[in-house]
Length: 236
Image 1 (cartoon, rainbow, N blue to C red):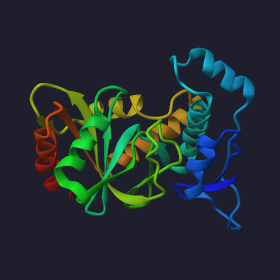
Image 2 (cartoon, rainbow, N blue to C red):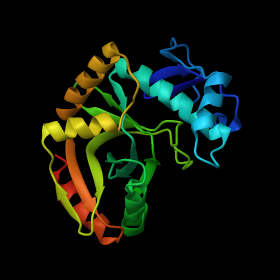
Image 3 (cartoon, rainbow, N blue to C red):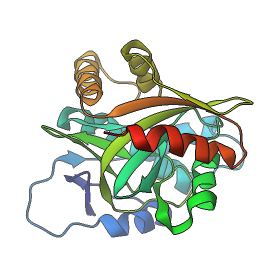
Image 4 (cartoon, rainbow, N blue to C red):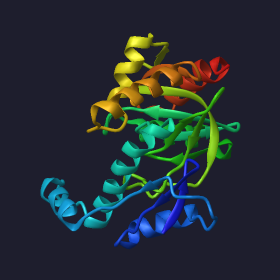
């Protein structure tokens, strides 16, 4: 099947229905040439199964495998994964990023509770960001991290927010060194030297195109209000 992800024409042929269904909203039937070709071998899936946590199904692992391959190949197109929950508010994307288990999805769901239909989640795990000449765009992908939230949408990127756990809610602005370090741990892994150089160039470009924050938060709904009050007014 041919799909369009972040304006990149991508060929992938999943064997399992999980990825097929997630990819349907991204189907592309135009005549543009393919930018990225993805394949996942049975041997690779078997190796993932041996390392996977108990209860993880092979269809979800196939989706994960396609996402890993796409996110590496997309780097040369000035496109990068930011492991995050992509929250949409007032026509802009806010990516709440952090390690698995830190609570980024829990936090964005607090926004849904606090602000209702003024916000929605575009992708709860694997959105990508594309650097354009004078702006960064956040795109949904058919890769969901198991949440089934994988909308085919695109919005201007307003901010990347790194989430940390804490008893008190607070927001601060990190310096560039900290931003680069945090981005490194939340993007594509296992890249060769040439691709790593391009990835760093993407980081530097993104620094010039959007805002970055560090949110320390608990799981009370007040965390959403603290984030809103300190991030939204500072997006420009």
